[in-house]
Length: 159
Ligand code: FES
Ligand code: FES
Image (tube, rainbow, N blue to C red; front, side, top):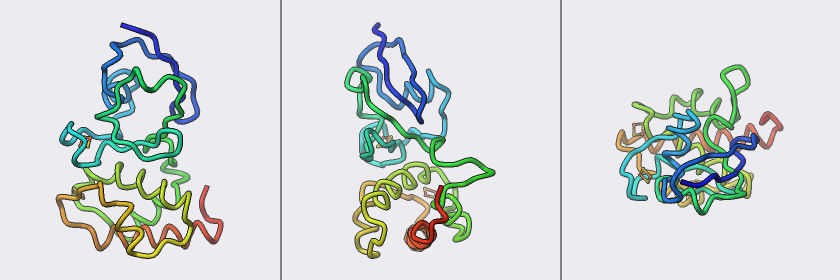
């Protein structure tokens, strides 16, 4: 067991756990942030995606021992029901998703894209989401939602 200090959604936290504990387990089981989902556990599906120092990473494959001093953003860090992030609003507006299980990871990958490229083409959006699997087949609506969010953010509607 070891104590590891990191920042999660802007809050400094210290977690005591084995160093090989996956970040996903730390988020869900130690910190109660259950918006990030467990899918395959093998870095194949993308539903556990979080931002690590601004980059999208699959948290099921990131041991706690590598997270010291890192800044993590989870889906809970994007917005609130009262003040949704432009991506969350756009996904609602487009009704992008069915079961919703993949969406936390997809929103995180999309945020990383829009933070570095405010005007992505549809091909660039598809490439950025290539590591995220949606088993419900909501891809077309998801692409539309990311395009809508980009427009909202360019208009300054983002938080
Ligand atoms: S649960 Fe991490 S990639 Fe599938
Ligand atoms: S909406 Fe069900 S897996 Fe994507």
